[in-house]
Amino acid sequence: MIPIDFIDNMQAQLGNELDAFCQALSEPPTVSIRVNDKLMPGELPVLINDSQARQVPWNPDGYYLSARPQFTLDPLMHAGCYYVQEPSSMFLDHVLRELVPDDAVVLDLCAAPGGKSTIISQHLLYGLLVSNEVVRQRVFILAENVQKWGNGNVIVTHNKPSDFSERLPNAFDCILVDAPCSGEGMFRKDERAQQEWSLKNVQMCAQRQKQILKDAWGALKPGGLIIYSTCTYNTLENEQIVRFINNELGADIVPIPLQQQWGIQQGLGCHFYPHKLRGEGLYMCALRKREQHFTEFRPKPAKKNKRQPQQDLQEVREWLFNPEIWHLYQTERFVIAFPEDFRELIEYMYDHFTCISVGFGLSELRGRHQAPLHSLSMVKDFNAEAFPIVELELPQALAYLRTEALQLPHAPVGLVLLTYHNIPLGFAKNIGNHCNNLYPYEWRIRNASL
Ligand code: SAM
Image (cartoon, rainbow, N blue to C red):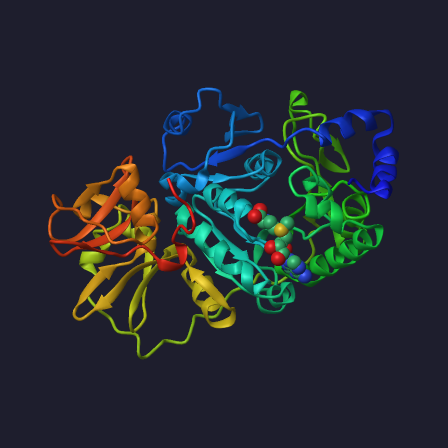
């Protein structure tokens, strides 16, 4: 049941468009995905057999699907070939292309489950993303989604917004605050959002949004960009928060170029209404922090870890197409790869933040040999041909993703890379009469049958 106070608010906002808006709320939400560049452009609609799939106007990687497939039973989703994402959220890609250079250092402050982080990491061809989530239970799904997307340029952290201002002052070129909100834009998709809605909750959300912004503000460079977004319509959580950033924190609104036929309404920020476009409710606004004299943050080089073993890593370098762009950081047990260009910042963060994942795990020391880690097989820079490859059919691929035992009688003995439609799914060790399944147990598919 749509709350009456909500309708009153919308009447004030939309005037004579209210009926069209209410009509749109009674229609089913769209089903859409955003495709990773692990696949060729246009390849996915063919693979998922949807000839009616149509591109999302503001994002060339986004597709509206004609029906909802059983995503859990598609190995390509588990391999990070696409992300099931609401179309309006995909607008972030357009904002980044317009306003953020691809070598920027970006903080996604409220990042779980990671849809927007995957957009940012793909945009930052030469940059770095810090993807943060303060709620402990949500941080692991964030790390999983980021790893599967496979850019390798992300640090996932579990910290409070104020930690960034205190420990990384003036460090970020851009901060995305995709704030926790009252979720009015999700009413069509999520009945709980309707039940939990109240005017009091809207006010509480607005207070929290201001606090989050205030706490993280010091981490943004003067001249840096803040992108503020919510999935709600009301002005208290949108325009009024933007005015707060503008007047009290000190930033100027940056208009976002739009195409009129997209149906996005630009006022003080961009509004997505479901009666004007195919997507759920969303609000997004970009502001530039005012320039002032400041000292650029320069992380001190990390203390040398005396116990860090220095092994010859020639073999593991061959598992990457471009080993020179990665710094290989060795711990007692693991080799972790992250972008060489950001080595000092990343080592500093390693020491000062609760890091859940850094770049990608490349290998683990087993006896005197390095064994590849699963996260390597998800990375776009992975040189799959360094391993014997076994292409799987759908039933075997699903058995692998459920971490069941496999039999691969025609595969070579030893470590093999399993693929589906030539996309890496992960490793297995073929012993001969059976295979040890090396898929991460915590990522396994549960309760799904073909
Ligand atoms: N950006 C995400 C995506 O695209 O997948 C969705 C983010 S969701 C709208 C807001 C996130 O903020 C949630 O993951 C929530 O746990 C987190 N959050 C809740 N309270 C917070 C707080 N006080 N400070 C920072 N983040 C908070």
